[in-house]
Image (cartoon, rainbow, N blue to C red; front, side, top):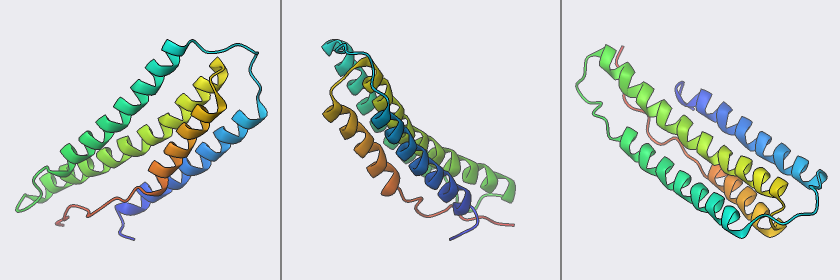
Amino acid sequence: MSKPERPLRYIQIFCIVSTLMIADVTRKIRPQQHCAASSLQWIIVGFVVALVLCSFFLQWFFRYFPSRSLPPWKNSIVLGYWMMGHILRLATAQSVALFAFVLHMLGSSAALVYVLYGSSLLLLLFWRPGVCPAQEN
């Protein structure tokens, strides 16, 4: 594991553990018996899908900043963009779990809530940092 990749792996582990903890809290908390409005429920699901797609686009955008033949101080800027893109992607994967918790508290169906938790865990488990931009000292 390279030096710039290590903090990202720690953030990934933290996000996985916190997603599992949120899912456990969801399992233990029973909201009042009311059903979420169908339109509100699907607006939140649509927002989650758009958020995940935007995170992939932002990751792609940050990945293609030029990193070859730059002075060392500009290479650190490229490394910062690379790390920022990955942190945003991990944060959006974590936010899917938080939206699942919100849907649970609104009284949404358990199947939808656990699909969102599973999606969050899949996004977090299959995340890979890719190639780190070259650093020149």
